[in-house]
Image: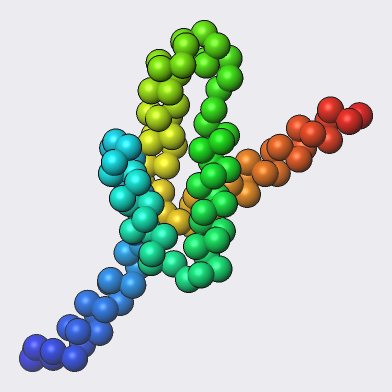
Length: 115
């Protein structure tokens, strides 16, 4: 069988297309840089969705009871770790989908409060 560089090149390109950038939540600095890297790889519309999804996910991680119990500094550290764990290893699409679920859950919770 003869080596065909064109087939090899096409195969290499197709393998690379499936590799989506993922967030690195190992620590706060790596998370920030990976958020910027993932964001820069997106279209303008997806960037807006991703930004909103990051905000929703981070806000959802806040535990006000923990804040009162642990105090400001310890609660901030716990929140930072929780956010890093929550976002670690996720693609932009996964973060956006997670934020959609959070919004749906909030709406359902709000509707239950009204009735």
